[in-house]
Length: 363
Ligand code: F6P
Image 1 (spheres, rainbow, N blue to C red):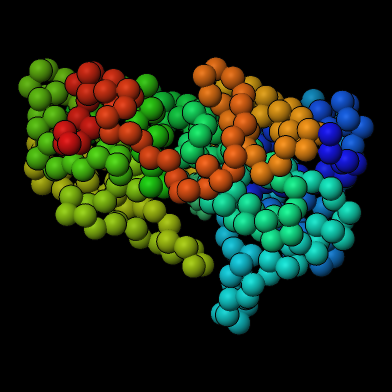
Image 2: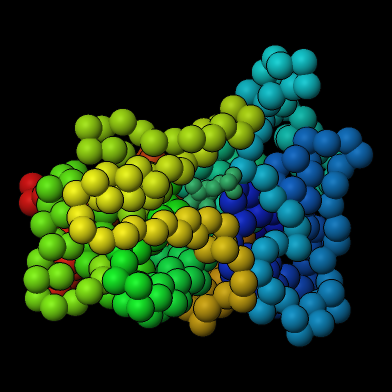
């Protein structure tokens, strides 16, 4: 058993549905089962780096029954500003990792639970290792690209948004005889596009992990039309490149490039080669918001309880994960090795191909 009285919790990286449900689960377990004091750190690592420290004590009475259902994160988060190379107002980069460690001790914390994606968990793990700060991770990201877990919090809700969008696009596509292109999030991974595309009845799904040809896309759309359907649905992951391998990224945010543009690139190319109008919908941040789906609430609840139990047992440097229909925990070192891609030979791609969906060229 670890000696823990004061537990810190923070959310880091892009927000997603289910974060508040995870915070709620941690607070419930920590207070009800272990009688600890829980501090919510504001805006990811910034809350411990800034002076005065930014935090809030989290009590059970804060959760008025709404928390489980709320999108976003009540703690705030950030997906910018690596503390090891923090962008300063004068344009220079500063190593602020020491301020984070100092903040942890100033608040008198004994352990930290970090809810983050692969990037945040990597940075927070590195930060905590600087001074043996006891940490446990909980995976979240709509991209679902965290290693060692079948699902991260937020993925299911995001996929539901994609499916809902396709349900809405199909009737209007049919009414106007159009090819509808839906660009979805996911960074360098195609999990959202693949699952959402299959569940939403797409004819073409393009993901970064599998090369495609415009000929292949055109052939599939023509096949659909030959068979008597007057419209087609194309789902493309934002991280896909152009046919000749160029990233279509169109925007920069601080020192980060933002993905975007592949949907319009495809529409331009297809309209030259397909005898039908094309229209593009870029789904964007609606995939991150809204009420969490059932599975995200369940994951968040199970992850939160298990993470607190790990802290109580003194089992640090671990991340809770979902494997084989239950919660397990794995060493964070096995997680922070990059992002988990779609397996081009895996069962979900096999399913898509089995349905006749064009998912790119066979490897
Ligand atoms: O990683 C989650 C994610 O939503 C990606 O799918 C997307 O590319 C990115 O974050 C968007 O980041 P931002 O909120 O900074 O625009």
